[in-house]
Image (cartoon, rainbow, N blue to C red; front, side):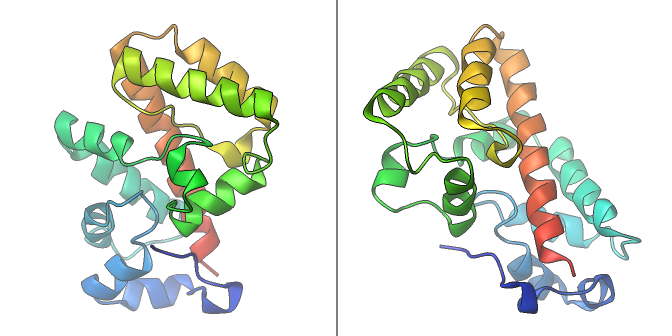
Length: 177
């Protein structure tokens, strides 16, 4: 399980630009769920002028990858309020983010609705519903899931990758002093 560094552990941009590729990869390994290969790819874009440039390098690494690899990245994300959350198997980043949106404190009715939406997503797209929960409240997350179930598979893949980019950007900003 990866973890977000404590604020005291955050590196400056100068320190990030000076890290070896293995150090950079290890430091940013949790930015994209179970996909440290994107940190290795982003390291090649150094030196970075600012934190947004780091986020852009991760986005470009994902965009440059194959469709199969992008689907693996999407599938690496846990279901919201799903089995992994209940079993305590989320990455530290995902657990913190889901808690920040109140997904660790659902009513039985909300939990049942998430189970229904997660199942519908898997049935329709073969993917989990991915959303940047730090940018939404519970109601917005539910509404977005219902709306996105109307997407075509291509639209949903693009929407999921867009949300993953938003998640990665916030995680990167958390890591840079």
